[in-house]
Length: 277
Image (cartoon, rainbow, N blue to C red; front, side):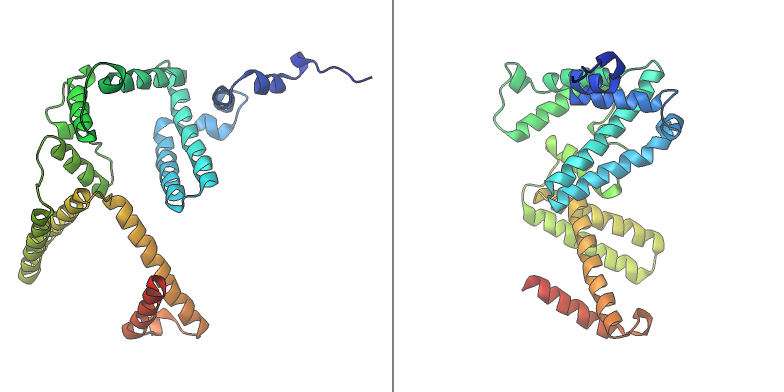
């Protein structure tokens, strides 16, 4: 005779069947942080968790670049777990929990989309963004801000930060009308950099390099290209081509330090042609 399963003696199974996946993950987080949980997880603080939050975010970006659904799913899960981790730390300190996080976000999204959840009318996505900034500026928590640019997080990577600042300025009309003007600005900044280099003024050179990069970021925004993404892909391309130089030299029993720039350039150009063929 088959013995019936006693749910009271099988709590883990009960949790899996009675809870939805999200609540099960919340329960796992609580268990890991409990006195009978994992020593490493229990030791973590907001400060110690910061690098992992950043790392998981970039792993999501890498998975998106590769367009691998299974990898994207996995990395989004890892990122979600970091969010739950921070929410659990806050809960233990009596501040808020994950449900408060979700409720707050629901309220914010409804409030900032009056064209969807209320009777506000918009004619374009550009108008949506203008309204978004206006609504955001008037929210109680943001009334201390003196500029619309104050909402850009200070720790953002410089390239992405430049892009976000320019986006916000553009939403209120501070923008070029024609791409020709944007390109002319890039040319102007390049000319000023060349002059600074000829003068050998290091401080001036640094300033002009910053101006040139900022102008290029503006150009990328104007043509709807994310500069951070573009640069990351460029770096990946450079790495692949440089690896081909190393591989080919290794096959021929040569080392980088003993190879001329001309020979390395020749291999580089072959790799480039192969990619474009």
